[in-house]
Length: 468
Image (cartoon, rainbow, N blue to C red; front, side):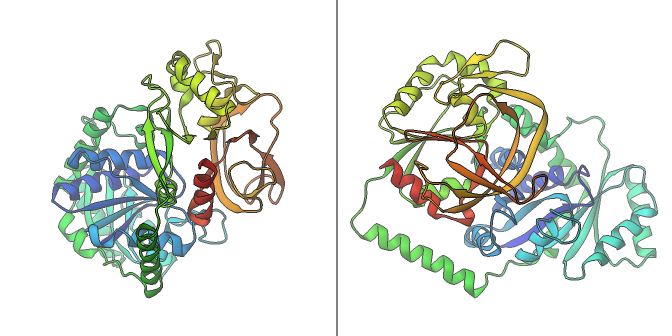
């Protein structure tokens, strides 16, 4: 398996567009492709899934690799488990190559992730309105960190072949010693591809845009040379031992007295689409049978389930459809009242609240009414990482357990919210302050945070056991 990290000089240069198109272009060549995303983003992986689905029909997951929510060992295991079934792993970077959580270190950056994986880096440079200065930019990126394996660059938004050749000559003259794999011209006629719209664009429209971008790559980028320049992924002895131990434990469990699977309903559609694949995999490893259903399609609560999960997403864009699905809302409320396990994050919290105010300014729509507050959208986004310590009385997770997560929301809640989780903020405003987050009642837990089980897989086991 070969691994390449697609990075940018800064946000907005087209790295996710090119990374996504590369996934499809290599899949068209018959290669087995796996997709990854640096950081905690939920939206870009949706574009990755569209790229792989458009070629194979298989909605293969794109997995997050986050330097804060996961350890270096956990990241290595997530990638290494695909080594035998993958020809090329394409890792979509975040922000600029060296941008991280502070200005003094590489923590959380694309560069850090590339070094953790010992991967090659393909640097995407937006060359619109640039000429010889591109050589200074690329040379600076190459020399900033000598430990980074910069395999080459792709010029994006060039003025055509002559402009690409001019840029290539400037690098040669500056002795930057960086390979150029091609230049992608500005495309004013094709469909506009904006990866951030993946959650609100139809699958067919998204796949059409990705296919167009993949065609541009095939016409203007030397994909064979790029593939040859990618280093092979080497699994360290420690990671190999960890994977072997995990396999042995699974085989031992399968050979021993088997516990019945725990059926857990997972709402998954355009309204509830923010899930970390690693979390879902951990739940299955812990004995869960995940049953997916679509609230906005009018589907009811699946039968014979012992737990329900509502992830984050965009319920505000589908408030009317959720309001109209009265049977589901009534079933969720009855399930929770009877002691059923219900877990909701962010957008899921909005669905379990008393009401949801949509962004169109219309009257609030009634939701499940399980949580004693209403929700509405604001004009500002709230983002940040957090380290969570499970507080006493939490119905789903063990007291004192520590897990990391993040928040990305435009919503706010009204009314009192008794808390069963303690949130210790590590970054941004309120550094080192302790805040309470979440609401618990019976076996219901709702929170504005998106947890990642990668740093503490025992939470998945705790959740499944709470459903038994």
